[in-house]
Every structure is written in structure tokens, then in C-alpha cells.
Length: 114
Image (tube, rainbow, N blue to C red; front, side):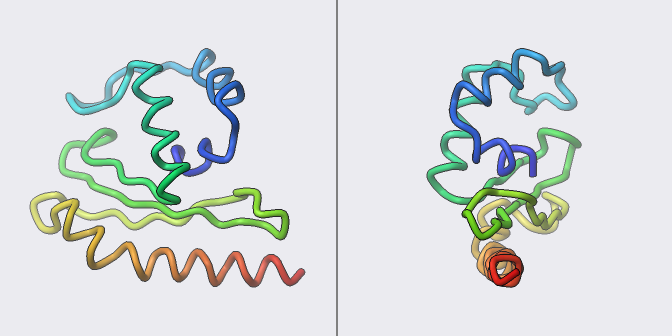
């Protein structure tokens, strides 16, 4: 969810946060290079959702989508996580991303009416 939340910032804002962050590896797949992480966040910005494949915990795959306020600013994110040995990343995207995005969009729409 962090990449989704950071994707609403411009590159300068992201870099300011990354400079202050302890980017130590949690698994062998954790992205710790700041330039690589910035590029991953840019990709999230373009796609409108994020996937993290076993970067925080071995076997844990998650996808997340933004929740936006009436000004289209990202104020929260929704996440679905699963076990990599049960649901592959491509399967998660195919089966779970559409309902995740639909749910996030519904919540956003409700917030935007307030």
C-alpha cells in the first residue's frame, strides 16, 4: 500500500521521503535501491495500482489500489494479500484486481459526495 500512497506525490516529494527512510531488505526480493524504488512508484502512478511480490515477507504477495478524495488526491489504499504458493501474481491480477479496484472506486465515490 505504501507505493500507492507515495504515487500521489511528485518525484521531489517521494525523494524527500526516501532520503529519510531505512530501506533495509526484509527478503531477498526487497527493493532497497532508491532509484529503483522511485521507478517502481512511478509505474504505480501510471498503472493506478501496485503489486508487491514477496518483498516484505517470503511467500506474501499483495496488490493495492488507491482511495481518492473529491480532489482526486490519494488519502488511503486498499489491499488484498495472498500466499504465492496458492495464488501467483498473474492470477491475483486477473482474479482479484478488478474487484479490488471496483471496491476502492466505490469508497472513493462515497467520499467524494461528502
